[in-house]
Length: 230
Image (cartoon, rainbow, N blue to C red; front, side, top):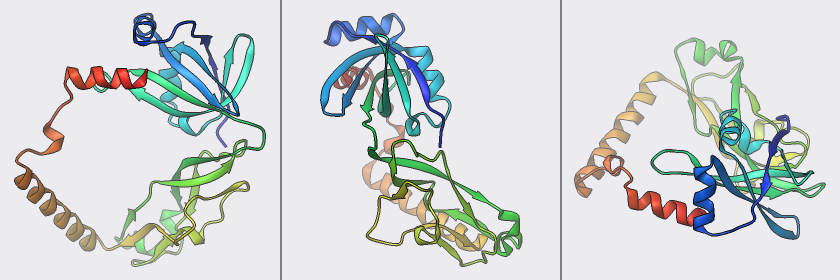
């Protein structure tokens, strides 16, 4: 499991758009702690520290001990809203964790022993269908990643969720099907699939006139995002 992170915070004395913008100008990020059958706690945290922890790559799957008014609150980050133009954090939500609570998290997968897969060593390609698994975990047993052993896999073989032994305290959030996580495919099969996808994208662009990816965010969108976060 990921080590618990520590995040100093201060209580927010004023609410509203004006107060939130003033905090951001001072290098602070408005935030709230909610859940646990308690009233929401409005706080603000240092932007530089929040960005530093976001850059660890496992912030959203880590227990975060928020220290406010001399007390530590055990939380799980649920959302960090980013400015649509600058990507700076403009608001954060933290879920207060009760003892023994179970929570939904997305945990990244890591593939090991690729050199022991006959399909991969003979030119096959590992086609990853899911880079993360949605799991229900005990709050104090959140794994930082799930290792998947691909030793022995041939071209045409697949890895399904049923083949995994998940860590103690974790189970798949998807229980109605035995979904595929990855397959070993021949390079030619992967290329054909990619070509078909590109043709579909071209048709969609022609039908719509302009591709959505070419439409950049404007100032109005940025303003609307900030207002929603408050």
